Image 1 (cartoon, one colour):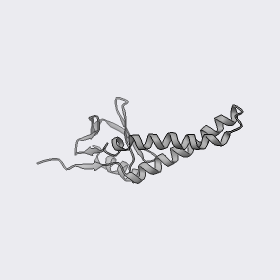
Image 2 (cartoon, helix red, strand yellow):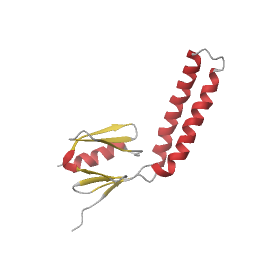
Image 3 (cartoon, rainbow, N blue to C red):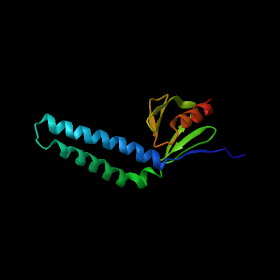
Image 4 (cartoon, rainbow, N blue to C red):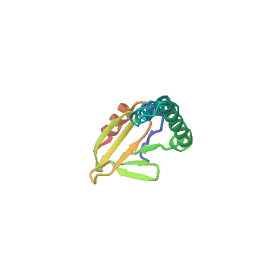
Length: 129
């Protein structure tokens, strides 16, 4: 009998929301740096930060939106391919729209852009031995 498979695919809205937050921080950070160095055109940091994150998000979208993880009764498999036996997982954490998997060996893996990271975390924790 084949193992049942649970799929954790990235969510487009979570991707957009995460990158919007990154853009906001980049805009504020760029403006702060310009202010600290005495640049009279502090406002230029805002469009620079927005452009930097916007271009990055556009460029990486095709790759990030295909990076799904699958969980069977014994293994969590992700892109790369990354394979994590469920009996090696010591912690499952959420960070924004990401779910972090920590193994007994200290390896850390991210399941990115989850629509409901708490539900992803709960599903993995339920499957742990």
